[in-house]
Image 1 (tube, rainbow, N blue to C red):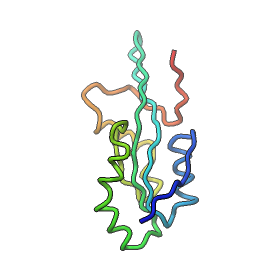
Image 2: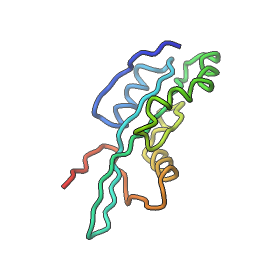
Image 3: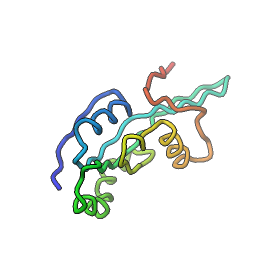
Image 4: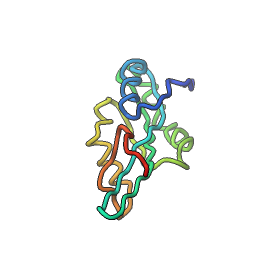
Length: 126
């Protein structure tokens, strides 16, 4: 499989979904996007960056290329390992819903969980 750049931007998960849905239906892709973790406990507020790494297998990808993803997914993840909070396999843009992502982020996190996640990254640091 050839590696080519599919896109970049600052629109978070929403923009990733638009790129995957419009340009990469017949492609395998990997990438990451930022989610802001907000922990607001009243007297203290903590804001942390969480990078979600994904491997996309478009619905029009042939069976041979789908099979290759299994053997190559480790090398895809290595590219993002140092900054990634969570990795997800994506076969449909619905797999990147806020509910699905929050579940994945919480399962990858430790015992101290944020109170919410900002998927549009609009939370401002004080």
